[in-house]
Image (cartoon, rainbow, N blue to C red):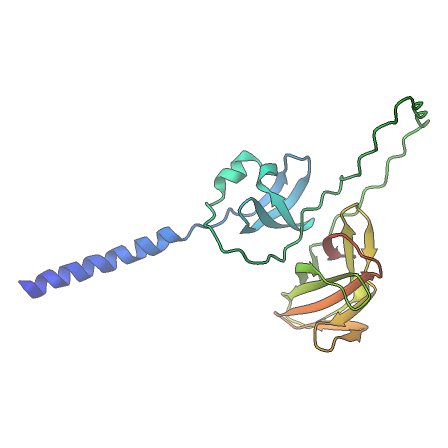
Length: 229
């Protein structure tokens, strides 16, 4: 009788193990074809990559973006799993970029005459949509990083999902600053010690590559890094 009771208890514990393991895993929401944010932006083919607590990191046709949960629709916010508390560790994710952002005009001085309105308003040409994949490669993340006396640089991580080694050049990259300016890459520096200047790089098949891309000698407030073509 004692042996039979032990067998029943052991079998019951095995039956409960998959349920406990399955309950601990909460999947992220599936990909969304279109996502309209509360600030007016519309993203396409959106997939949630990670939950950062007050914000989420998503990958869309417009690039890899960090979006505040306050800008998400209520239905998307409710579908996100509860974020468990994590330790304070440095984050290397890109900040949110608003293409419609513009600096506010200073308030008019007392007694100043209002400026005459322009005769016609020129509508700027639409900015081309960002390319998420180029030659089978995807920009996974970036981190602003200066190189010697060159301040406008970024350490970029590239993932190659194709079956062949892919050649890339500095001009294949473009950065967008917080004020909306676009800068094309100038040089590539291998992330080694000591760093070496390269005219071109090869991303290994089904592998990753880290390179420092220079965009300007001046310090840039880089908000996004994407493919230039």
